[in-house]
Image (cartoon, rainbow, N blue to C red; front, side):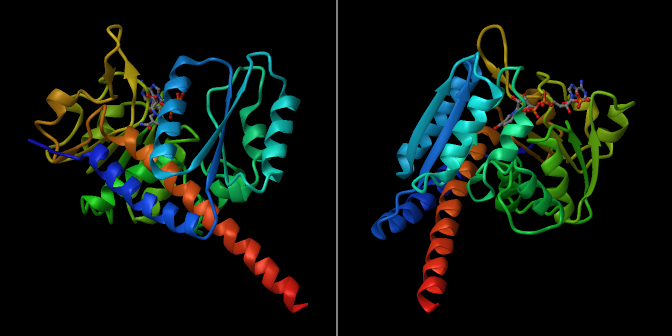
Length: 294
Ligand code: NDP
């Protein structure tokens, strides 16, 4: 029977530590602030945004929501991002996806200034991650890597198979796992004989959005199984991309849904907001020092 990787508990521990860091910043007169932009009225987004606001409250991060209508134009969205880029009191900017189809989300991400890119989606963050420089890491992959760290799951030399190649989950995970010296295979909807890949994996990370897709016969004995998927069944129940009940009998470690990767994503977002605030504060003070010296 697999050991359960308790994302809820680990996320709680991370948030508690972040609260201490946030209190220390406040003692210096700095209050971290996150701006969240939501466009349209996607029901799932509303839930995610509510959870983010709750976590901010708990830690002491100020939270400001900007809700734009379904008919928002690209210019209106970019203008808002540019305005938030300029506001010194805003430390992090998050654009909640999905956004309506008339809008170009990549253009919007590109407009977010690097120092406030707490989601790690700007080309600068993605590029830095690729060349192994320290940067903001997309929150879900970052949360998954923290789970490996906490549970002493060493990826060195391991065969990691990632299911899904999205810009926000699958792709950054490739870089994160490569940095830990894993041999990485990425599967997607056009992959042939997917089971051949998953069956030889030491670690499987499922992020495809297909309820209970990963079955017991698709994994090898003792594999580590990380379930990123969040799917809602007709009765409103949340399920992951992994058939948890059966796969747990064969895996060595497994994450549940809910209570696995989800809470970690939010905790790492909070982490990125605190780190962004610190970096901005440092940069501002360095600038003052240089200025005074001149
Ligand atoms: P996307 O829809 O952007 O990407 C899905 C990926 O899965 C694509 O690469 C797609 O392939 C691939 N895929 C879809 N069906 C199959 C299949 N049958 N076999 C193989 N590959 C397949 O999703 P996201 O990456 O945004 O999200 C994935 C899941 O993770 C969703 O359930 C989402 O709700 C969840 N999620 C959870 C988070 C958390 O905090 N726990 C955070 C973010 C997402 P192709 O590229 O060929 O289309």
